[in-house]
Amino acid sequence: MAQPGRLSAAEIGCAPPGKHADGGGLTLVVKPSGSRSWVARVSADGKRRDIGLGAYPAVSLDEARRRAAELRARAQLVNGRAVSDPRSQIAGVPTFAQAAASVHALNAPRWRNERHAREWLDSLHRHAEALMHLPVDRITRAHVLEVLHPIWHDKPETARRIRQRIRTVLSYAMALHEHIGSNAAGDGIDAALPPMPRIRNHQRALHYRDVRQALRRVDASNSSAASRLCLRFLVLTATRSAEARGARWSEIEEADAAWRIPAERMKSGVEHRVPLSSQALDALDAAREIRDGSGLVFPSPLKPGHPLSWQTLLKLLRTNELDCTVHGFRSSFKTWAIEATTTPWAVGEAALAHVVGNSTEAAYVRGDLFEQRRKLMAAWADFVAPRPRPRSS
Image (cartoon, rainbow, N blue to C red; front, side, top):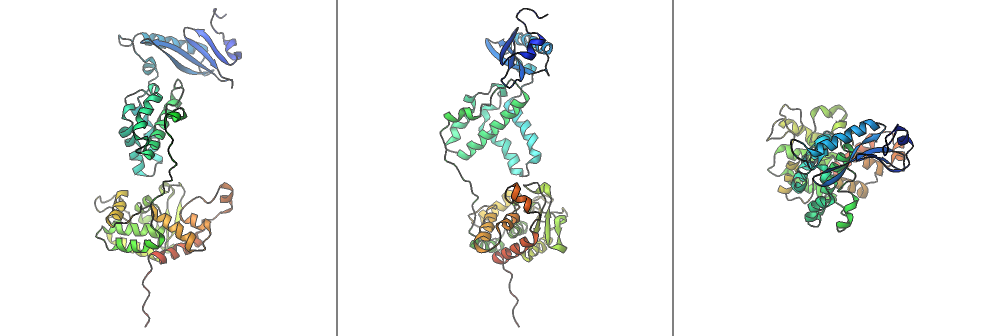
């Protein structure tokens, strides 16, 4: 029989939505959905804290009482002194820096862009330093606003990223620690952040008519053969920087004039087969002169056995005073395909390794449109890098 003022096992199962006290600071919380969970109220350093103990029935009545009693005991004395946050001692609540490192380690294997993986954590240490030493359950909206306000207007795109990354870290912490009830970087701070205009961050691109001259300028420069050939190959294949820089000889199918990029190196996670024009094959022939035994088509001249870094190609463009990004050449190609050819839209998208339409439309595009793409890539190569015509006798 239950003691006066305390819950019984029978009452727990039929308790209506609301809060039901069991005594000693332990409360059963029943939500309108019918889910039930335990919360313990603990006082330490003159502050009251509600700490989640788990959901019922996974945590039984007896177990909830035991955990609540342990919390009360630890709140009174830990190593001979009162502690301000007993749950940090019991639940192992990490600091923001520790949680951010865990989130980074969890996601890094799926990030194919090494620059993004490195910058993700560095940006938090750089812009959210004020949060790093705080336990994640002590971070408030005021803390997050203190980080965001200095950069919200001056560096709007950076501020957006930092807020999203803080929100991701705190969401991770919420998933592991039930007593964290809300995300301090969530929608609740919107009213305290002045609205920013929507930013369409297009990669700077040359007009497709200027790409030919750009390649000629790069070819005539004193840059390394690896960087010059890699950029030419990237432009001729309309591939991404990481895909071209990481190209390996084992991926080249010379008999079929194709380049098979494995799924693990594709942004989409799906294998992509690229038809190689005569000009692209010429670039590969020239690249044989810079082989270093690593299997890379365009190995770094500074770090043998390693691919070129993303900065190398960007520096190549800057050195030759080309006002565009490496990724922008894909935009140049796409605009040319739309404006200067009669190529179906789906073929142009497939050439860029984009998903064609929605799931219903994609279901009707069973093949990879390879032969159509071969014609398109040959025409693009003839447009931006025409081969000299043989002299007539």
